[in-house]
Image (cartoon, rainbow, N blue to C red; front, side):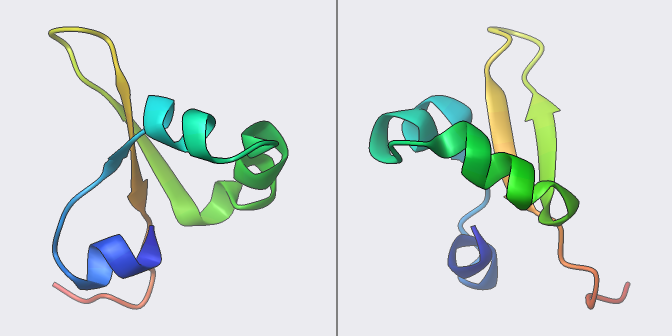
Length: 57
């Protein structure tokens, strides 16, 4: 997620993470402070974004 954010490519679908990572629930729980979950209103799919705390506006 961090590399995706640094490249400016946006978020990743939760489905894609679940398909590619065997124990994704444990990994997402460990990284809970660094991940933002956004739910799309049209199809209710969750998108993961990296929560960059060092970024300034």
